[in-house]
Length: 286
Image 1 (cartoon, rainbow, N blue to C red):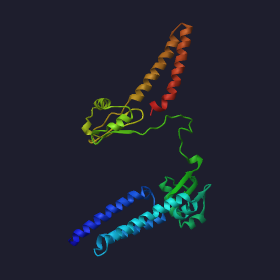
Image 2: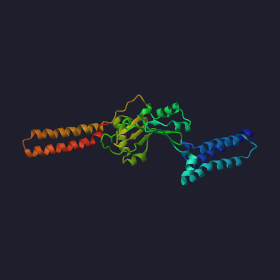
Image 3: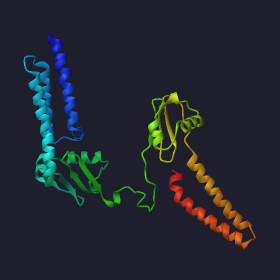
Image 4: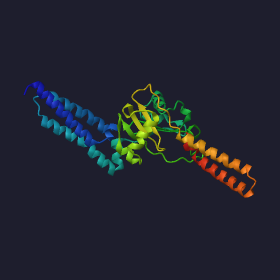
């Protein structure tokens, strides 16, 4: 076998074997690296280079060495799951950098962090003032978790006493101009409904890059032709307007009738409908 072809075969084989090892190690190694995993990554990279270029060496021994080194962090992870002490040694501990709004300089020196490093981490969390921070922790993966002071935290629906319906994942029903039947069936819809919605929007299926249906059953379309504008769904707002009109009509009937019984009935129904509208406002006016 020519040397160039031998290098090609060794390189491709090494990469395929390395891909297999990465799949075995799992997604955790893609998300964060511990000290051991960092060392293992460097070692495996060196071995792959030797396997691909050292034609006199045994590629079988190289593959064996890669497998042994790759399995080392897997074994450590299994042991770490059984022992908190081993887990602290392998993965390290988190370090408090800011507590009760006060920067802990000794902890920063221990982690060899300067003020610029701390400010960079805070800016990455959209925090630009140390005075706004109640608690900050340097995690074992090198990231910094930040808790803002209560007065600096953003308002939520819970703070305002508003109850919202649970969020559901939007389903992608069109991708690259093709209908995805499984997501459609998941939300209880079919191709007929989808084609009707496309006709309402005046859009052809072939011109749709992505189509998604949210929890309210509204279809969002992104087209290949960015110059075309798709009309936004108005169903919730139209429903809100219809309900308000019905409530106003009930109040008008209550004022115009001479029957006390009918007046009381219309007034009661108007108040009842108003309570329903108040509950639906977060959904119908977004």
